[in-house]
Image (cartoon, rainbow over all chains, first blue to last red; front, side):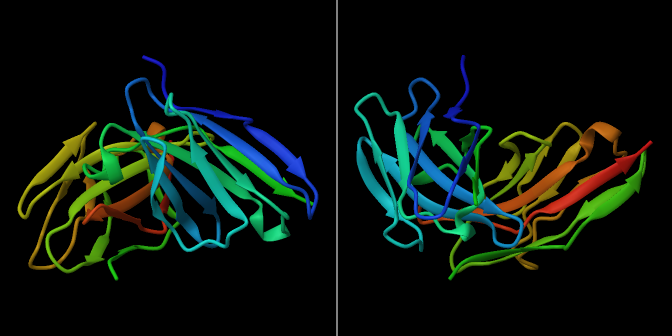
Length: 115
Length: 110
């Protein structure tokens, strides 16, 4: 069965622009979580969606937002990009809500570079 | 709040060497513990898990035992291979909140 698919894999933006990243979870998975990975901060939780509802949110500014569609696909959006937003953005899906089992299935990530 | 602390890397070993990556946690209550692995250019994959004290998780020759008395979940492998070169993340889940350690980069040389 297909894994978690993230698009685009790589993108370059300039400061002040906005970006939308997409994540298609494993078929049947209803929970989608987003993480930001940087060399300095490691893996930081952004938010989680289950059944189109945001269930949990990390400590990121309001410029970071997301949504989930009825088919469980999710998008995250970052507005007014800053240099510090350069990172690998990872999406993870799971069967259960709120990562109850801790068994997350990650995509390969979208690498964002902000110039 | 809950947190996970891993030994700092990078760790460089020769093939067939013994591997230990230390992981300790801080949490109230009884978290579930995990090791995830990230190979170059890929997302994270679940390597093993343990859900209660004294449980041993194992997979692909890797093992980790949930030690409540020392709040630890150290990852071990008896004989590493070049293909084990990756970044390893320790993580915990409690009350539907998941926390990852900073990751430990392992390089295995032939």
